[in-house]
Every structure is written in structure tokens, then in C-alpha cells.
Amino acid sequence: MAKALSEILADDVRAALTAVLGDAARGADPLIRPSDHADFQANGVLPLAKAVKGNPRELATRVAAVLAPDPDAVGDAAPAPVSTSGVVAAVEVAGPGFLNLTLTDAALAAQTAERLGDPRLGVPPTAVGRTTVIDYSQPNIAKEMHVGHLRSTVIGDALVRLLEFDGRTVIRQNHLGDWGTQFGMLIQYLVEHPDARPAEAEHSGEVAISWLTTLYRDARAAFEADAEFAGRARKRVVTLQGGDAESLAAWEEMVAESKRYFEDVYARLDVRLVDADAVGESFYNPYLAEVADDLERRGVAVRSNGALCVFFDDVKGPDGEPVPLIVQKSDGGFGYAATDLAAIRHRVGTLKADQILYVVDSRQALHFRMVFEAARRAGYLPDDVEAVHVQFGSVLGPDGKPFKTRAGKTVRLIELLDGAVDHAVATVEEKNPDLDPAAARAEAKVVGIGAVKYADLSTSRTKDYIFDLDRMVSLQGNTSVYLQYAHARIHSILRKLPAGTTPHVHPRLALEPAERRLALHLDEFGATLATVIEAFEPHRLASYLYTLAQTFSDFYENCPVVKAPTDEARENRAALVQLTGDTLKLGLALLGINAPDQL
Ligand code: ARG
Image (cartoon, rainbow, N blue to C red):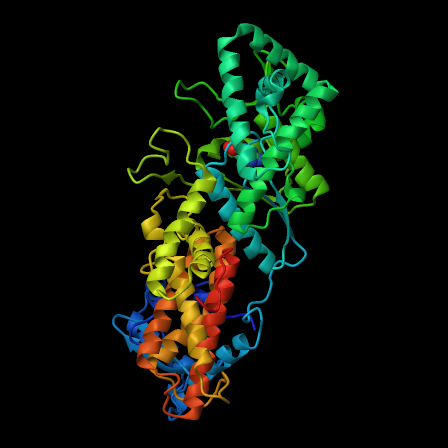
């Protein structure tokens, strides 16, 4: 089973429209929407009537007769039979020509039953055999990760889970900023100040980033204040590039120390990135000269004032002059763009991607537009390979400005995550005052980290949002905490079922309106995932889950489960409860958020 009832219904209405109008209805969208008056409404008759210059109410009446033929109609009044799925129980023409559609209880029961029995909840994988390369997280060596890296990491991780669920092979690439002229200064400083390192060899990621940050600050200060040091630092870049052992060892040490810190952050965030996914900028060094030559030979790049540039008709600066993508600087050095072009060749040629995603903030939109276009021209990015800049907005502080500490520094990611967990302790204690402190702390980890991720993922990706811990860990509103507690409550309901009651769908049972609404929303899970994956928009899954939790709570108020009127009704309701719990659990897991059975 793949299709939701709304999709089956759309097929039926489309068939009915074609039966009535013939070719004129081909390709028409029946515009199926949830309705307050029935299970669904179809709004597609109106635009179609307009197109064929017909009377919309009359057309709607004829379509209705095809969808649910009146058994008493005979002769001319009887429409030609059209084979439809049989899910429609009743049709009503409303207003100027809408169709109100009610489905059979049996159709709802059948969908629920099929989803309930299946670990994938009835959602088949659609992209088996396809390969995505996803470039995300991308922190920079010897530097703190900032909230931008947090967004990239969290969004990237959710997309990895979603795409894998859809059957794709997903190759994660953590494009670490591990190369560049700043390493000359860092290495030189480290060589000259060996005790800049921590005293103990065994130390935490936090200690690692702390000494690296100090090293960075001191090296920069020396570089700016001391011309002789700056000279030695510049020479160091050359020896590093020449493969000098001492320079390489110092570089490797800084990379390893930084990774220690990144891995700490990844572990706290519970994301899937591992060391093998770290393929930094330095990996592409050996290919840069060759890529530059190749681009020049193909005429994609040209020399301009000594630099090797790619020009675009539609990319101009404020002064009207064309802004090129610089592949090689006039001093011979290769930069960010050359690396990205080499990376595309690798991702298409070696990794065999048919889709490449870059989870990077929106300020780099122009860079990626130019890189993709240059790669297309050079033939590195064939037409059948999709390249997408999955862009995102900024994280803002309470004042609506980019998120910084009071002193104007970047907020340390580890502190921010610790802060979220501390905040969540209060929420957990509010909900369950009897919990002992250690258990409360353990729950707060799940709640607090989930809250940070969910706040990010539930916001439309391209928008900015304010980092507000109080809102993030609130029990009310569209938060992961609300969803995690809804999930835990479901398990407590299931635990309270009388012995011998198991969730079971009874197809002949008449459903209450609140049961119908819940069953119909559950049924939309797969269709929702499809739109999420298509547009790389996790926030659509978040709003689906939020609506699910709300629909469930309405159901639970109206339809007692443990005290249901009959055994059949109880088992049937238990099936809806179970499927809701499973859907919340899987949906949150696809966002990278844990939902324990007990909170
Ligand atoms: N390291 C860069 C930064 O911190 C982001 C890299 C994005 N990925 C890429 N392939 N260019 O801004």
C-alpha cells in the first residue's frame, strides 16, 4: 500500500471528471482538501467548469453521480459506469460547485490496519538504487562551531534519515574547513610555542577547542603585531604545501584536536556523522591544479588580471561590472571555489551521486549558483545529476540580531547545548516532581537536545529564528517536548488497557467523527513524507506531527479508550492509539529526535 485515501480519492475524482468531460478534464487537479463538513472536499470542479464554459453546479452534480451512483437511477439518468476505488460513501454538491466527500468506514479501517502492522507504517521506499551525496555540518578546524554549523548539522542529519528511509543510498560528506593560508600562522605559532598545547595528552573535546581557540587568537595577534612572525608564517604556508613533515605533523595535530571537539558535539547532538564522513577541503588539494587547467582548456574559465575566472551574464556587482567565480587567484593560490568544483567531480565521478545536496546558509547562495553553473558548463555536473543548495536562514538572539554573547562573541555550542539541558530539567520536574535528580537529568538530556533540534527543524528552513530556550522547552505549543509527552502518554494509555485487549482494527465498526479525523490524519503520513523529501523541508513533517498530537488529544477527549462502550470499540480505539504512538515515534526519529515510551 502506498497511497493515502486523499490520493485514492483524487484518482477517483479525476476519473469521474474525465468520464463526464472527456479530454477536457485531462491533467486537471481535483484539488482535494480536508473539509469541515465531510472527510474531504474537491474544489477542482470550479476551475474546470470555467475552462469549458459550463455551469459549475451542474457539472458537480454529474461528477457526483459518477462517484456515488444513485442505485435507483435508470435509463438516461444513470451515468455510464466508471470504475472507481469504492472508497466513497457519499457525495454532496455544495456552494457554487464544491463536492463534499465522505469515505466509507471500511476504507478508513483498511488503511489503519495496513499501516499498523508494518514497521514502515505503510510507507514504501521510492528511491531505492539512487545515491545522494550530502554535504553538511562543515565546521572549520581550530575554530568553535557556531549556530550556523548547528543548523547545518541538524538539518543535514534529518535529511540523511529521511532520504535513507526513502530507500536512497546516502553518502555523508563533512566538508571540514581544514585548509587555507591561516594554517601557516597557526603552525608557525605552535612550532614556536610548544606549550600552547594542554599539559595532559588525554583530554576532552572541550579542552581541545579551548586551547585551539587560544592558539588561534594568539597566532593572529602575533601575525598582526609582528612583521617578522608574519613573514615566517607566510613561509610556513609554502613549506606546508610542499609536504614538509614538521608542518604536516602540526597541521594533523590541529585537525585531530578539532575532530575530538566536533565528535563531542555530534555525540551530544546524537547525529550520525562519524570520522569516516569527514572529507575536508584538504582532500581535494591534489586535484585543484588539474581542475583549473581543465576549466581553462575547455574555455569555461578565462584569465582576467592574472586570475582564472568564470563569468556569468547575469551575475554583476553593484557597479554593474561582472562578478566572476575565481578558480585561481593571481598569486597562484586556489580557493574555496576550486575546491567545490573538484568536489563535484569527485561526487559525480567517484561517488556516483545522482543528487548532491549542500546544507549551507543562504548567504552562500550566489557562490553555489556560480559553482553549479560552472560545473554544468564543464560537464562535471551532467543534466541527470541534481545539485541543490539546501539553504537556511540565521539564528537570532533575543534582540532579533545575529546570535552573539553579550561581548559580541560567537556563542559556544557546547555551552548552548548544556544550557538547553539545564532548562529542560525544570520542565521535566514540573511534569514529574517525584523523579530523583539523576533520572531527571537523564530525561532532560533527551528533552533539551530534542528541543534545540526541533526548534530548528520546525521553522521553515529559509527563515531566521530567535534562539529562545524558554519557548523551546515549553510543554505548550509546537515543541518537541509537547510531542514527546504526547507519545509517552500514549504508551501510558496502552499500559492501562485491560489484560487481553490488544490493538485491533474492526472493519465493520461505525466510527465517531473524532476517530475519523484521527484515522485520516494518520493516513497522510506517507504523503507528508513525500513532500518533505521532495522539497527538503523537515518543517512540514514537524507541523504534521504537531497536528497529529492535537488531533489525538481531541480524539482522546471524545472517545474513551479504556472505558470504551464495547470490546470491539476498545480494540479499535487502541489500534488508533497505537498507530498514533508509532507515527509520532517514527516521525520524530526521522527528525533525529528521540521519543522514550516513558517520560
Ligand atoms: N566551512 C564552510 C563555513 O563554515 C562551509 C562549507 C560549505 N560546504 C561547501 N562544500 N562549500 O562557512
